[in-house]
Image (cartoon, rainbow, N blue to C red; front, side, top):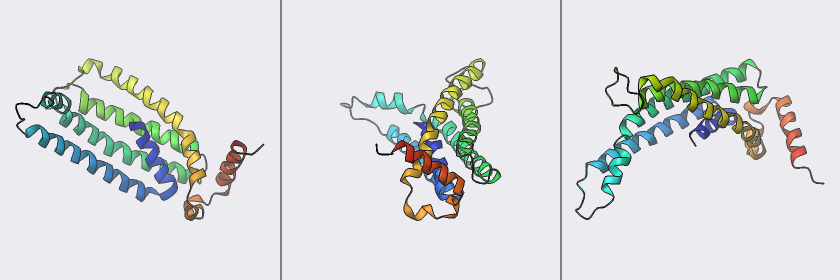
Length: 198
């Protein structure tokens, strides 16, 4: 599911521009921060003697601050990086090669996300004031496995970015972001073949 966030910011950057995609990062960050605060307030309550769920809640949310701190840090860094790289590739290629900007920006930002989250949120490094889940000797193994999974998801989401043009609101079809005739022609040609009536 987390990989879909990168697809969503790529779609926002593609159709609405860098500024709107950055607003979505601020909203996502605020929601994650609210979740951390709310779960910690929930754990501070003294349960009723008949409360059977409190222990499960403690087990579920006790690790939340460290994991969510790592997640928030990785999220902010990786999402801004994804949008920046996406926009730079878009500018360099004159709005061509949608598949390239989608995959390259996501692959680079997912690598940064994976390294930051695994280091801050999961690994027992001596320089962090938290207990970790993994030992430092397992760090690169966890990064490699997590990154491979994220890359598979990133490659699978590319058709959905192309598909997003099929459902593009009419008012966006004539925006400056969508004025590259070659790209529009290519996408319309693909959809004409996909959805042609026999």
